[in-house]
Image (cartoon, rainbow, N blue to C red):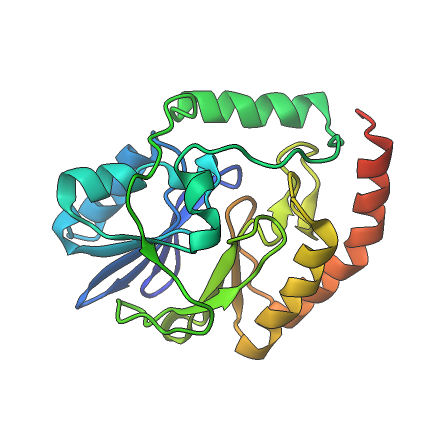
Length: 249
């Protein structure tokens, strides 16, 4: 999916990854699931580009459904992988904190796990070497992405702002499709370590003024970062209530 010239998505509303494409090369943001490797190769062919044009993989955090083909690119094609040190252990297969019981709907839950299985979600390739990210730094990569600390979903969650494509890539800082309920629209993401901190962190995005807000799960949001953050803030009380009840609907 081409969102705007130079900005592409692979995957689906269930799990997605993104490409910033410039004449100088390609920056990949998040790496989806292992089976998205085929989607990546197909997209590169459509763009008349190759894996050799990829300059880096930027990971918003270390959850397995964002690591996908990252280690494959690093190991087989010498593509550097960037990650905040706070999530290095997580991306290496280390333990995750236990979250509160999550609200779910059977149909959405089955859809998520079915898609994950089809895309190789049981074959996670943990990332064995990464380059550290620092809050506020601008990376010398296609799209000149700037790192924005976004702790809460995980200790090392970050977003990336690329003025070139007028987009901020938020990982699981928020979602526009809840993978467990199927609810759509900007809202807090499930499986968040510290929900209150994650909500506060979204304020760090507002100064970007970006048109596109691009989550790891859900449709791309093109109505601006201000509206996205407001919508998540408004949705948070209901989401917190459902999580406390831990109901299955």
